[in-house]
Length: 449
Image (cartoon, rainbow, N blue to C red):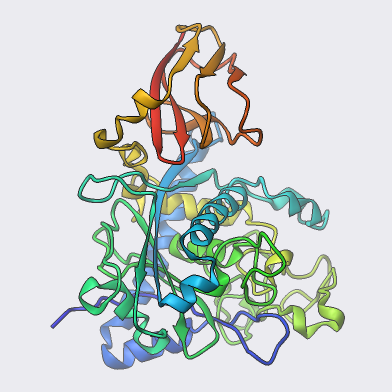
């Protein structure tokens, strides 16, 4: 019998009768079910919460002891397992449509987790100083666990109409039941795209409880909440079309709680648990657009826990407003996420595998198809990349030897064959220039002196 590890679940629920989706988390209900089945889960949940708080304190203390208060960008391999039936795959536009959604979803994550999302301009001035930059970058792996090539996603055609929430969509996570097996969760962040039944659940998370993640750890999204809308007729759930469901769920995976603390409407002053983050205002409960006239959430929005001043932070990624109203993480939330990725954090291993972003040697034929010249090399900072063939060029990136990005560009004009880049001021040393095409990546060494 297969042993299933169930650790923490957050379900986002859509009510069909609403014009727009409403998010509602099933974490408390699932927690009660798990504890009822196995009382030891009460300790597991409490330990996980305390461990997150302790690691955050240690992380913040470590930052206070160094002169530089900035953190290096970390890059995490994220793989998408699309487990849908033929009709659902067609609804997303087939393989081509799914590929576009995968890339748009990763782009959305990288904007949200690096404070590059343009809608931060909509954050009220009172909260603007609190906007945090997680400096977390997500990338599609180019190598499967067995070392073979991949685009960073796989499409599994199932005969199932959907996968039940009450089983945590477990059937989608094993090839033996017609799903897609987990890729090593110590190296990849796994996301399954399925139809979650019964209708309504947008997504849920099973984050790692220990340094040895379980076989089902990862995130499940329903397929109508996946990616970023590109056209008016694209299939998306109402109001959930900017990729923020996955932003929210990854927040949970990296130890963030909802901003109101899932405590039944209590406030910290009367026994409420809050979210454990000091710079998110105390909040009694979740925020829905549909609870306000015209779906417009006012500012300030006051409640029992913050009855004055700037009110609650409803525009936070960890609240329940629609995608177009989510704008920010705070500095405190960033510290909490970075702590789980730090050297002593549970998810640190996800940051330690830059080799997964390199195509395996069996795609070396790319070298024969394209000629790339970088000059001058060595350089004092400015250099030019010249391409003989730019068809399918997706991205040019410069990485240090730790796999951390120091520069990247995604060309909008696919006819340009020469790119002049000036990285004057970059520390001396050897860097890797990665040129990613539709069918592979070519890497060159570049020395700065």
